[in-house]
Structure formats: C-alpha cells, structure tokens
Length: 116
Image (tube, rainbow, N blue to C red; front, side):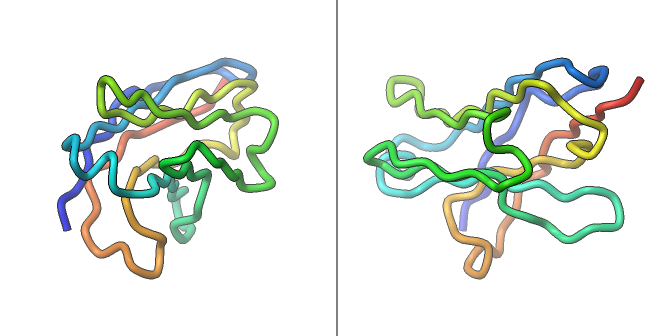
C-alpha cells in the first residue's frame, strides 16, 4: 500500500472552519474509493467520510451536515471541508484508499485542534 499525503490541519476556535486536502497518484486516485478517518487522543481510529469514483458520499453521524467531502479529478485530490467545528472534532485526520479493515499503511495525517 502507498500512503496518501494529508495537509491543511491546524488550530481553530469552536465554530471555525478548516479545509483538509489529500493527494494521490492519478491512477490510484481514479481507481479507488477515498476515505477520511480521524483518531482522537485515547480513541480508536474512526471513519469520517468517504467518496466513490462516481461521487457517492457518506458521513459519520457526528459530522453529517457540518463536513463535506469532495474530489478534484484535475488535481488528483480529495478534500474535507469542515465547518462549525467542535472541540470533539480534535483529532489527527488521515486519508486512505481502503476501508478500515483493509487499510494497513497510513500516512502521517494532519492534526486538527479545536479549542478556545
């Protein structure tokens, strides 16, 4: 497995917004469903959202209505727009091409910290 490259994290106050990006080789990007995961301190990694090659999306209940996943086929990236951020969104965010039971190789992730 080839890890993907995440970016865009940072420190934001509750109610703020961040946009995360994930870059992949073009052939991999076009061939796979892409997933965003996160892992909060002391917690297990959990699915945040995914998007298929046809554009179908799904979201965890905890982020639905606040987060939006999208693909930019020209740039071979998948993004996660995060609005109305809450302290409980604090986590390291990862992208991956596999469902969690199959994902073995993880990138460094990008840290999102929501705090006043």
